[in-house]
Image (tube, rainbow, N blue to C red):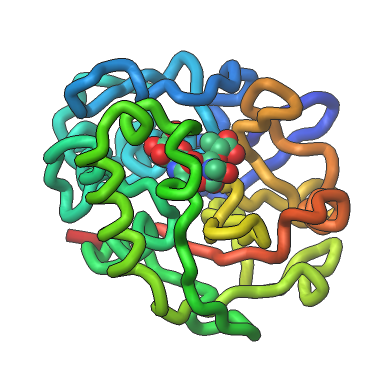
Amino acid sequence: MVAISFGNQVFSQANDIVLRNASLFINTPYKAHTLEVNNTESLIINQEEVDCTTFVEYVLAMSLSNCHTKTTSDSAFVNYLRCIRYRDGNINGYTSRLHYMSEWIDNIVNQGLVSDITSKYGSSEMTLSLSYMSSNPHYYAQLKNSPSNLSKMKAIETTLNGKKVRWLPSDSISLHGPDFIEDGDIIMITTNIKGLDIAHVGFAIHNQSNELCLLHASSRHKKVVIDSQPLKQLLIGNSKWTGIRVLRMNTSHP
Ligand code: 2YP
């Protein structure tokens, strides 16, 4: 049994490998843009400071490779991280990185690494309409400085648009969460921001009152935390957050 303590609460998880690995990052500082360090795209591993996405990527790669410690050398960890972060695992420039979470999901579902739980339990369907990055190149150094990357990103958005995905709107999420969500599941928060699909990601964890909470790299708390506010309250408190998609790591995977 894994006992995760945070603040004055102890979360005891029945050997949940994902939460065990995620808990290694608790209090790790939040930092955006840790992957934007070189002009040439390469596999960056920086577990000393994370954003919501790199936190989930490192924990998933650790859990898939069954290594229970932060590592930069374990070859299985490095291989899984590359497969998670890059389209079909191939690093080939900035646009080969999976920037939109909908494509990030498809990539690892297609590799058999995770299952899309909301494809089964999602009560609603949305049609992807992605344009955020190509419409806001000034937010992305490698788009602002490269017309070639910008045109590639537009083409990627076009190939992704029109795809229908299942999701769960906030009003169908209770304080204790839908029963199908398990501790360690990956929670992807959908958004109404124009041209964007997902606005934040983290892990599901139920607190001692069995309320569904997020273990996530929080820009508000400026570190990795088990949020004291249940997910339901976070969703109500953010008008740009509309609901969730849920993924689960496959314990038997290639
Ligand atoms: C991603 O943003 C970036 C990737 O380019 C980057 O901005 C987009 C569409 N993609 O490689 C990756 C790692 O840095 O981050 C994330 C961002 O969440 C931030 C990091 C957070 O909440 O900590 C993912 O896309 C997850 O949710 C969205 C969110 N981006 C925006 O809200 C624009």
